[in-house]
Length: 181
Image (cartoon, helix red, strand yellow):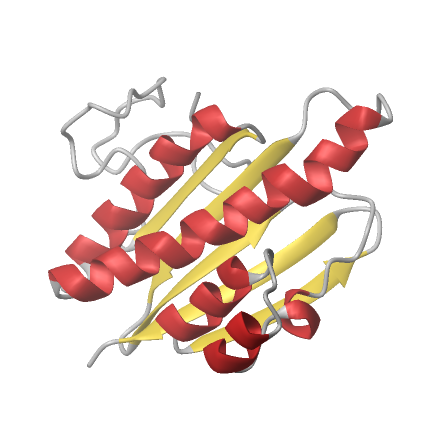
């Protein structure tokens, strides 16, 4: 289910009320908030079932920003990897300890004049500094026969800038930046 973020207006860009959207919905403005063209966002459950909805929103945002299909695919993959890491690592551990059942992922995309910024927020209790665990080079990764951590390399390789911060009491915030040409 896609929900309106409380920090944005209560109506869609065309004045319509927010509603549930399916992944197959073909309206390009489904994820626009308020009266702000170039601003998209969703709040979804922190489960694998939400990944197609997240990918759909990111693809629509990147397409509207004018990225080439290859760049759109890279942006989509970077976001998908980040959200998968939240589900597999942060939320899986919380569920094993029977902590909050209603774990959500917030994803926001904002078009600027020179870039697309994507912010991903989880509600984990632990700081997961993604940049500390990513391999620097694939030769080292494969020579050490590692089995995890490839997603972090993909995230760093497929966008231009990655920033992370832990907000005590709120969770991890990851900012992915992709510049236009």
